[in-house]
Length: 402
Ligand SMILES: Cc1ncc(COP(=O)(O)O)c(C=O)c1O
Image (cartoon, rainbow, N blue to C red; front, side, top):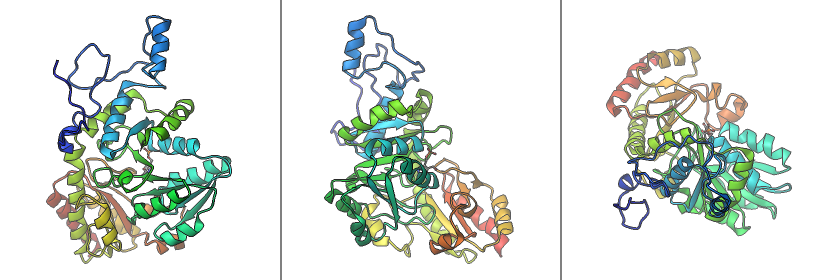
C-alpha cells in the first residue's frame, strides 16, 4: 500500500499541499478510506482485558470523551498549521480558554491580561478566575515597560490576543514572551482574529496558542470548536482536565472543522488580501471617518506589523467609522447586498458587527471612546466574495451618508 503522506515529513512541500494530508492517517483502521470518516461512536470495543490494558497504556481510543479519531486528525492539522508540537480540540473556543486557565493556574497566582480582549474571555478572567482566587490584572499591553513593572513573583501568565477587537491593535508577542519567561511564566495567545496563516505566535515565543475553530479555520459558519497548541508537556497537563471538565470537541463538529480546514489556504489569504483592498477603498472614501487595518500606511504599529505578519493582507478583519447616526447605519447595513450583520466572524461570506451594541455594549462610553470605539464604528469580517464586487457594494451603500 502506498504510504499516506503526512504533513511535516521534512520534504519541504508547500502548506497548501501538506494541509490536505495533515492528520489524514488513522492507524489500526483496516480499511483505506480516501478521507477521514466521521467516527460517531461513543466507545471502541476491546476483545479482552489484556487489549483493554494495552489500549489504555498506549493512550488509544477507548471512550469518546477521552479520545476520538476525528479530534486526533483535527489536532494534528492544527499543530501543523501553528507549527506546534501538540494540540487539543475543544467543544468551543471558550472551552479551550477556560480549560487551559483552570489547568495552569492555582489560587494565589497573578495573571497579566490585555485589557482589550474578547468580552467573554474578559468575563472568564473576572468571574471564573476570581472563584479560583487567581488575581487577574488588566493592562494595556502596548507598553512593555509597564508590563515588566507589573510582574510579581506570583505572575504565572500573560494572556493576550494577537490583535484586538475591534481596533486591531497589535500585541508585541516577542517582548511579552521575553518578559514572562524571565519569571518562568507562560504567554498564552488567542490567534482567532489573525489565524496561523497570518502569524504563528509560537514562533514569537508564545507557550500556548488558542484558536476559536468556529471562525476562520472552519470557515463555513456551521460548527463550533476550539484548540490549544503547545509543547507536549503542557498539552499532557491540559488533556486530563479537559476530559474531566467535559470540554473536548464532539466527533461531528471536529469532522466538519477538519473538512473546512482543508481549504484554509484557498480562503484565508484571499480574505486577508480582499480586506486590505477594502480597507484602502474605505480609507479613500470621504464618507468614512477612520479605518483600522494593519495593511494601511497610517496603521500606528506599521513597523511591528511588518515584523510580525507573514502575509501582506495581515488580517481578514477590519473596522471603520462613519457618522454617529444609528438610523443611517441601519439603512447602510440594509443597503448592502453582500455583507450582513451576524454576531460571528471568519466565515466565507462577509459579515458585519456593531461593537457598541454588541461586543462592547457593557464597556462605558468614555472608555470606548478612549480606545476609538464610537457608535459610528462597524467591524467587518471579510469573506471570499470578489473584491471589486465587495468594494462597489460598500461604496454604493455608503451613499446613505452623502
Ligand atoms: C477572539 C475570540 N476569542 C475567542 C472566542 C470564543 O470562541 P467560541 O465562540 O468558539 O467559544 C471568540 C468568539 O467570538 C473570539 O472572537
